[in-house]
Length: 442
Length: 177
Image (cartoon, rainbow over the protein chains, first blue to last red):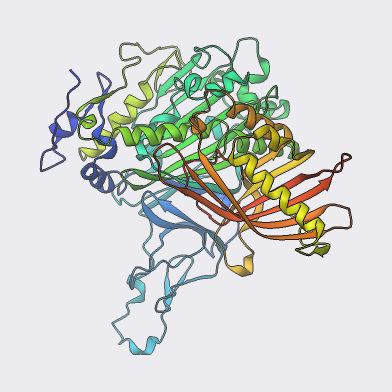
């Protein structure tokens, strides 16, 4: 039952061939889709050339000329607020020889100057001059045609900036579909929304990028992977503890969950926010959104394919007090088996300085590469990647069957397909379903 | 983040005080590389702080890339103790089975400050291998504040770890710098 085609067809990409590797209905996913170089090449074109990607938050570039260097999918990008205050996403590559024109991680710039031959661009991407320009004939340089390449579309939701290289891509609103409702709920709850603090943590892991995406909405792993914290009394000693919540398939591969805490733990509710922020939340959210947010302790969501938010709560020391924190994550695939991980800390703009400080401290101690939790996640992804590389292992499937027979509920206040159990691989199956549709060129 | 590490009077190599500091750094490295974490905790003051800021690549005119607004570590004695207790469980998978580390400490500059503490800058190279994996390597600068306790022993009161890398090329940071 669990055998896969042992060789991929020479013309990879036929609907039937890919469909044989990803059986969403039965929850059987081929191991080879994670590490096969031929599949990775196809992903570059069909996923990383086409999807919408998170590039940053508007609070990272508040002033004209502010820019940060960021991947846009798998291409090097520049997220910049230009002289007119417009947010742009540019390919970080001179039109002459392709040299990187922005060579820092962040700066405030009036112009982007290519070191190679001295071509100079405005922060809007417009080519303004080249060195020794008089050696070009009147129709040779063609400045108006050779500005920096712009992302095909750039748009924002709740200050989160997304971009795509595909001119044919649907609008961000259409792409997000029902996920927009939940991003509005999570990021738009307090006055002024959330802001990024500092600069992202970036590190490289020897993992196939999809082991990262697979993990984020997975609550089932918490009790086992993070068992050291159960041992220390920082997580409940109950294998079911993270199962009291809802999983949501918001369509187009976007997925999320809301997990509730113990019924009598008032502090864990409303994302564990302090009283003044809860008050704002009650003012800012519509009654249906509030019905979802009030009982929720934590929420994790994925905007297909590589953007994740993790709104979590944890104590950061033995016998400590739980604090909530918001963490954004993104995978930047470098090769079939190596991925650059990006992680941002965010906090409500209108929160007290003390809450902001403690929330960030708690985040850094528990998540990110040194986090008490996160350290062990990366261990899993690396060993999964290595063990799934072999020619024998690749013949077999992985097991994503939890909840394949479970029926969704109909009395949820928000959109999407919703299940009343936060253990189950419904979200992963929805993600792989979208992967298959995109890889088939839909 | 600025510990004022370059304030004070230089303590020259060859002096008894310099030798005492150097010996402490070596004993610390030996404790960490041999999994004697409780011994290491004993080398820290009660108000120890332990921070590793995130570094960005920037023009020199904009500084060395540290802004103090994002960290890889932001610990105190209590959270460091939690890290150590975690390593002692059977389930800290990132270190179970444990990494093999080697702390190489060099370029030690010591200053005696007006407040009685010692300011110590050193370079580190930390190598790590796990299971059958290849090497992961970390280099950078440590800025330590040392204070003498009532028992006469020098202890670490503050450490800032300045990584050379902007992108950490390692699975995770489950080791102590």
